[in-house]
Length: 343
Ligand code: PBG
Image (cartoon, rainbow, N blue to C red; front, side, top):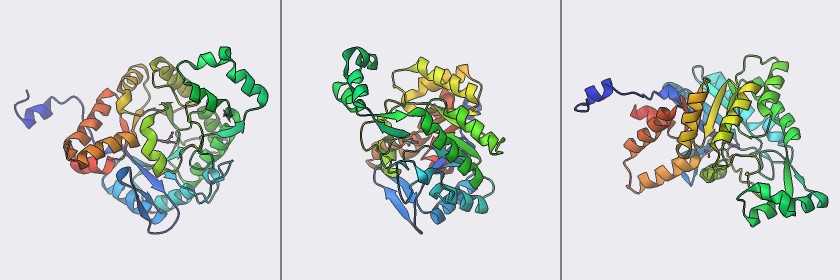
């Protein structure tokens, strides 16, 4: 059954179509701007007019959709740029929606790109009393394998979960107003899907679906994205809110909670290092399942391709079919246009 492409194609169990792909775009201020990300060859910061062109091309390649990230003019401690009516993503959404009809536009909802400190939530310095409790060995031990250095950093500040929910909800409503087809929270605060659902409903957006980054792991593979979105945390890291890469059962619990709170689609992120999580999520849950082939996965493949160490066309499609085979029906990937052209 492997003797010819005709036979192989006849018995192929998994297929890719451009509709499986969601293409991420990074929108920045200015006009005519196409600034290439050094660690992500072929990926750009785009001003709104350029983003519209990319959206048009995505539409003509019949991609499933695009997902928008924003680089605001200014950052502050309440993420104003995320929810402002004239925020960069809000303006981009209006411009794209005016020009492009047959393309789903997804809004990534997170605050890290808009916060001066680069964290995904509201940050508060810890009090002296709290610090003392944190450094007590008995309370520090539940941190499991964390290093001394990490524990030291964590004693200085904390992310405030519930105040963050309010800003995330406000951001989601503002994006829906701008015309976003799907709201996709990526912040990993507890309870955000429920809060956003309630906020959207109250604002009249009862039909706007939520794609939850349900199992998002604290990953070294996000490195290049933080250059692209200018969102690296100024201190500490994201391990107090993103998941520990060692935990599959906890990932299932996170997904289950998001479904109970009203998620319409769920996501596992990153993709290639977490294919087992994806497969288990596919077995357990019946919602549409997405996976994010993240910046670091793209960067390592591109580096090898550019060195001539890997065959470009083959590894792009092989990496995507593996994610599809593991169970994802939607793949967020920087290779979306390349793969659609290859198909
Ligand atoms: C925002 C966000 C991140 C990514 C998507 N949304 C970065 C992070 O959590 O640090 C990563 C995407 C990628 O690496 O391609 N929180």
